[in-house]
Length: 312
Image (cartoon, rainbow, N blue to C red; front, side, top):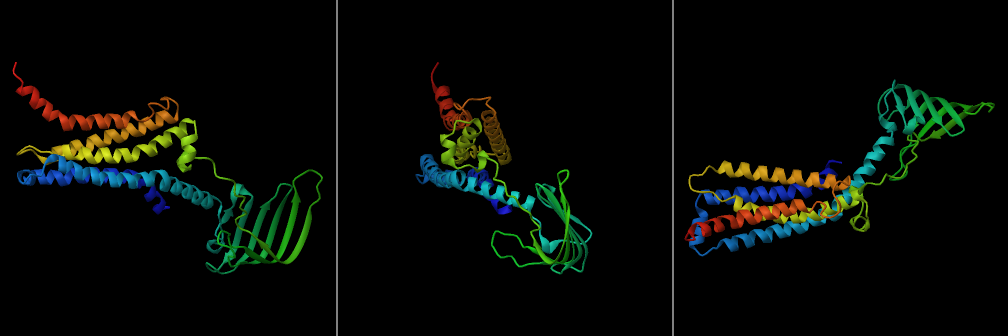
């Protein structure tokens, strides 16, 4: 489950890692006057930006694959594991003196005595609920049986068992049986299909859906590679530092900008999910603001110099 959650988080971790890496690395080069030497050797800012765009583009493609394919698969597997954990009982790990309740309370198992894990239990009580009756089983010994299928659960063999069948309906006769041995399933699993979740749905299904939750999820998946590219490019102008300027000022501003952008994206996604914002503009106004900020920080100093140099 930790591995699946890591796969889910990569679409957010990769963009922020790229963004901060560019800011920190280029800020160090600016602070040590390395860029001045590079520009003196005919390395232009355009070439520097092209290198960053190439790196950001490759990572954006990887993030697109993670967001469109890997992330929904990881969510699907995570939901399946969570569902299985809710309804599964491990017979080998049962301890004496504890009631083990199965799915919806239809199965209850109690061990009176047990010497240790993987050893037979003694004085075992089992309650099994059916639609028309309730069965209560008392057995002297209980042995876990080897698991026969990859997806199945280990069965339990009960020896010297007494079975009491109690009817649920009025007038239904009760019965009592004695068996030398009986096999029961401690899980008692009635696996219901997983509930639909937009985060685990396939991207093609989301693209054809008109539900607000599906639209918000699909737009989020498409926005992550775009955010990766824009954040990588934004790190270049944000890393610029004036002589004797404290570098931590730039780092703090870069972190605040990313925090604000991530908050805007998640808020826009929530608004689309709940129908507050329609499918268009959807969440696209948040990347549009980031693109506008990128243009301002890249072209702003040149425009300011141009206007200051214009005669009155």
